[in-house]
Length: 391
Ligand SMILES: *Cc1c(COP(=O)(O)O)cnc(C)c1O
Image (cartoon, rainbow, N blue to C red):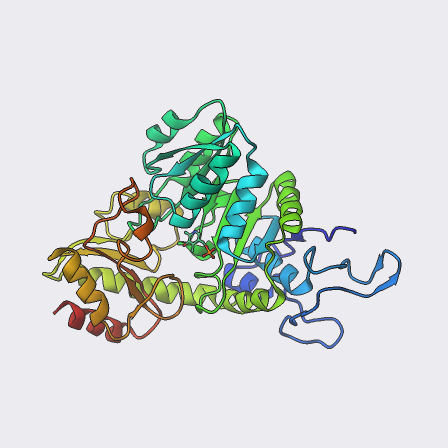
């Protein structure tokens, strides 16, 4: 079986972000002129003679044109050369970890890592002989101190979930590269519109495309983007070998979301800024976590490496867990649900929902904490909904 070449960024270097989101990898289809990338819902491809392929495709686990379009667009948006699209963010994380680490090697992870990533490393990779140290990534001295001769990878998230801590991507890249290690940045919370880790020195950007890239809460997916040829090939090899590929329809849905990423993100940011402002003035609110607030400890670094501060806002309330739980069930427009990054506003109690599995560990979150994924509805309606729930 021949190998389909990894999707390569084909964008014009002069094109802006919103232009690339609509055009990179998405030329009208040659046969009919279809403006929308077709959903190539096929498992296999006719060969004209043994081994003579019409367009480089032989089997859809190895490659599919709808997936290639998505991979090309994502590579362009992250400013990388190679993109790979997976069936979920966790499948992307699994491939990154296994392609970049061997048994006996060590990685540094955030002490507030995404719960699913922590579980994958702690429960799946550790038994295979990989070790890790969890540190607060906002503290570069702590990261430096955790580096060992066996450290081959720093795994970063910024902003983090749900406390929106900020890590200095360029600083982490320097520490990693000085000791011959690589840096992966899970860029899910920011999206490539707000932050481009490769330009700041990271080796790999990872996405749960389930969130802002897909943007409509209707598909699960993941992606890895890199400019490193060796890593690009290794990711493609692992993707094909382990098989966690994004299907044609999921790729199409994600690509449909990607086209509007820039306008959606600006509206998410506008609305989140207004929500953070409003929460700061509420008597029932003890503390607001949003990197756009000047008092946020990571504000200056976020201002330097992000275009804007994102659509996620967390806050602690007076009255402890009981009151926090009540507020979560009192909103009308903010839907009580896990996940984030869709056009609709969501509210959740991390301690009992997304972060229930880390109770009692160093990743535990305050029990009076509420997390908002601020959607793109009319801001007056969102503010009124929160004010009513907090009354
Ligand atoms: C959701 C999420 C993931 C996992 O992605 P799935 O698509 O759910 O597999 C990884 N990292 C972050 C930061 C996430 O929010």
